[in-house]
Image (cartoon, rainbow, N blue to C red; front, side):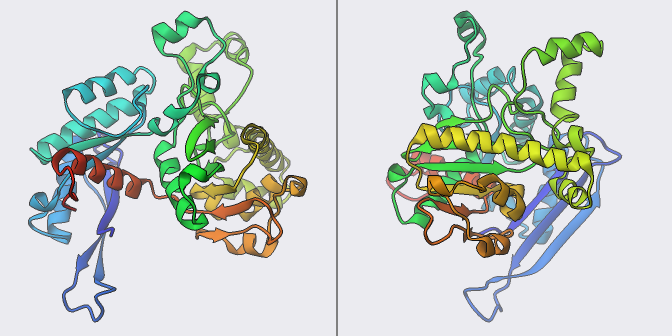
Length: 397
């Protein structure tokens, strides 16, 4: 049961930092025990938050007012999404060794892991003595075989610098595999799935017997699909070419590929909804952007169909996957010969909600499944705490 949600934006930018939050207060007078949550306490306010400690302290103050004055005592554990964990394959209780591992992996995700460390250290100050768990975005894909994660570079680059495919969105994929179990009524170990996590950041994963065997993102989240501002796959020779022609250093090229490319680079806007609207109005660049976006997605779908051999279901999730019938229709167009066929009416109706959108005669099921990374982190956190502090029993919620 979710009792509060929110985010803190622009920590450190004291003129623009703010807290956006929503909390539901338990109401003992609620007429039905099945509906105990009432009275949204919504907040959207600017607050000068200089660092993560100030931000989390402000969140705690809000929860004391909106939820419970004893919220500090009621918190059983804290779960953190950590973007990169190198070869770590499961969530871990945060201790000195875990902190060192997160810092070690920061060379591969410097913008993310150092911020994750700041959040962990802030939580230790605001909630002293409470167990903390790191849930790694890369962990789910550690089941990939070497032929899927290795790059054909000099081998010592791999051994010295850990340059390989890691994959991301693992927290989402872990959750979606669990949902597939429920929806298909089969154990994950019996399922072959292609899962498309399509948002501003986008990736696809091939899942055999419930385990990741390939995914589109690589050493960083830049590889793979066309995204909101990321280029996805390109010829590596583009990098030195741009450095020479645009007189850029490595950081400058990285900025172009990560923040100025993708839909933004092709169409001038990063939001797929705006690109689709512009394409519908006849904008040539927007129409091209959609075609490039779908072409790249279909390339991965085709590769994973071939790689898996047999596919039980294709799952669309995240912002675009859950809300864009048009992208789903384009992605799967003409695949009837492979046993994949949409029901057009069901596809159009499935916007932001769980649904099966395949035709009855389709051999492969096609599902829209909203992801919930926060719930996945919470469940994995409680599982780690239970195993560490309550072996053989359930952890306190």
